[in-house]
Image 1 (cartoon, rainbow, N blue to C red):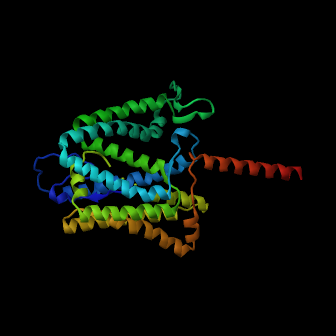
Image 2: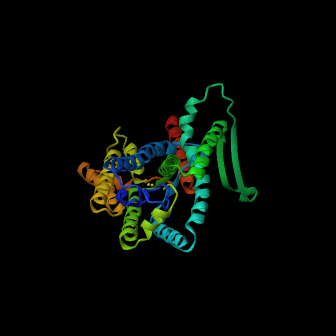
Length: 349
């Protein structure tokens, strides 16, 4: 979800788009419609497909693809960390030359963008490789310590097909670095968003409410209370979006009713909230904190559906364990062993 949206009427930079000091031509109705349509499309695509990929990611067995779980403590701290980061960027842009800061950030997103885009296109590219393609498996493993004290720092598995995707993504990366073209910029933005929704999981609905509530206050304060958010958004040449909707899709699947009611409800709520943001921005000709409209919609709509269906308890009691947490792995193993022992007891009887 975008933190703040700038009005295309005033010639300010679009979210994630390159900026320059030259005067832009006046907006036309066709241009405004294209800008708003692109904004909606860029916001909705990563959420929809990222949510679907998050389900597959949660079921995956590859250690390199295991999702990171956001706990309630992480959710409570995130708005504070985001505020410090935003203020830090604002001070950097005020103190140092914008040109050098954007060069540093461009190099940072050049590397991350290539990796994110490669991971995003890999499943699609696999369909185009012939069966005779010489595909070899590789593993990048970094450990710390030795013997019983050995600890994995990085454990990433990949193959030759992934290297081909990395090469193709590098071409887009060089294009972005040299030209700052909006297509390359948006491809990186989509890749970041898809990977974020896919690989970052909320552990339960309550954590999602804490996160969204904190970001609601963060967004409203920094947009309406100060000029920090708008200043950074206009100066920041990097593609930047969000996970609650993906959690509701996995909750739908956990109900085992072969319906995606909560996912589609929250997705429709997101469209409503974003459309309302654009409408208000268009009417008042002023940057708007998108979360002011998105958070009430994305939380309120699914909760109302849960109330109507009598599933509020199930919604807020649903919880996902962290697959990287040793305790969760131990519990999973214990559960498997218990099930196996019960099966053996039944057979003996």
